[in-house]
Length: 278
Image 1 (tube, rainbow, N blue to C red):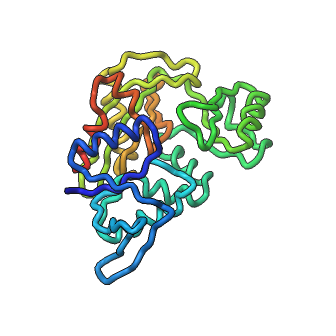
Image 2 (cartoon, helix red, strand yellow):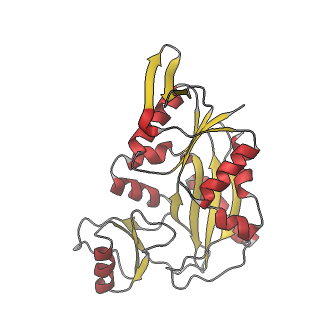
């Protein structure tokens, strides 16, 4: 039986993943991060949690950056030494215990991405108005605002105590979410492409659940050529297309939720993701 160390908060997506893992024959290990011990040997690392030996875990999946993220990262590194496949979270954990600003910048600014920067202080001027201002630790569009003036920008900046990402505003014709599973030594697998409504972007139209084939093909070509193979794990990409058909990568989410997609697509997304891990 495959044994997976699964660390996740009590979220809808996390619970869907837990159920799918069990249904596909995984034994789920939830370690006590406060009772971890490690012993290096010639054969690897002996890892125990509260007296339970978890050295033989075959997979690890992390869906949280809790206050214990340094310990989670240490556990991931030790398991990796034993040949455990770190499915998701290792790169994200490595960034989260480093500089958050660098992490957020790396996540959004790349080939095909929207011009993005992180201001050092409130006097740092946006690229040009209008701009999108969003919290570095934002979730599901919370705190995301379109700012048309310097006054709007300062208000959004102050509301988030300066911990913001600033992006050029583009009134997308389509805005979509693409879920990709990319594991070492395997081709990247596309789980779904679906329309996505972002309430912060005025001008974004509500689109049908399924994305037109021409739009989907354009997004797939852009991601395949520029980004997908560079990021491993379970990644949710937010993609925008303007009225001229130009593709923009808004950001890559390293712990994407997909409980809403299950309802909208009438698809067992968690099961599809887990089957790609086996």
